[in-house]
Amino acid sequence: MIPLRRSLPTLNLLSTFESAARLGSFTLAAAELGVTQAAVSQQIKALEQELNKPLFVRAHRRVVLTPAGVALAQAVGGAFFRMSEMIETLRQPEVPDTVAIGVTLAFNQFWLMPRLPDFRARFPHVRLRLVADDTPMDLRQARLDVAIRYGKPPFEDAVSHAEKAERAFPVASPLLLDRLGIRAEEADLPHLPLIASDIVNPAWMPWRQWAKALRLGPALGRASDMSRLRFNHYSDTVQAALNGEGVTMGWDVLLEDILREGRLVRLGQDSVVPEERYNLITPLGREPSPATRVFLDWIVERLSIAAA
Image (cartoon, rainbow, N blue to C red; front, side, top):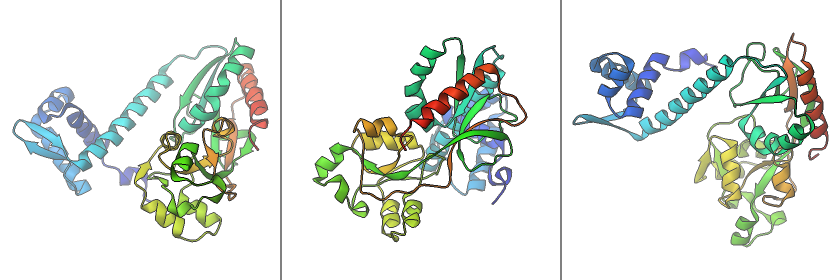
């Protein structure tokens, strides 16, 4: 694997690009960054040479992003925003009886948030600070008291207190099935509109990997490659499936509420139980505070009654 620092352009180049893309002007970017317009133009040219793609179309007194530039601007802008949010979070002073919790975006949206009213009603004296981010972080360095991590222990930076297995299977909205005139138990996946992923995150199992685990052959993988709808966040794929746009991969713990309410239904009987699990972890070498213990006990109780 190529080290991250060697595979990415320098932060200076990306920062210059982000400013120029956001402002739509090399001149305005130069003013914002405190450099000359020529320096901005030079750095953009260096980035384009490194990526072997034009990022801007130079027009009279303005610049316009190319399709590649638009894609990079969305990724870089989003990454800078998340870094800024995380830095501001870490700068906040510690407050007694506060528990800082690290979760993935999908786990926070689909599992934790619907259950937080129960915790707040039972333990009103405990303050919660949620840090939802799909970026892996070392708990020994992050200012987190507890995290829900999807993976396989042991972990170098954390102690696992409890774990919960997941099960993956295709799901779709009843609206889609009605529109296509098919029954859930008779769904022929390679011939259905599959929602695919570009970037695999901890809350996703790609179609090809799922089919390989079940030894279903290459047809499903080829069908996913031809998908007309792709996302890089699992939350977006679920919303698209709820809208009747296609079939996505479902998880019985993560989507427990949605499946129970019938907003998404399971297709067929095939499923995969990955080796990875949800792990309730705390930083290695740090004794959990009384407030953290309260949260740990509560979430262990709630996970024990999650879908099995």
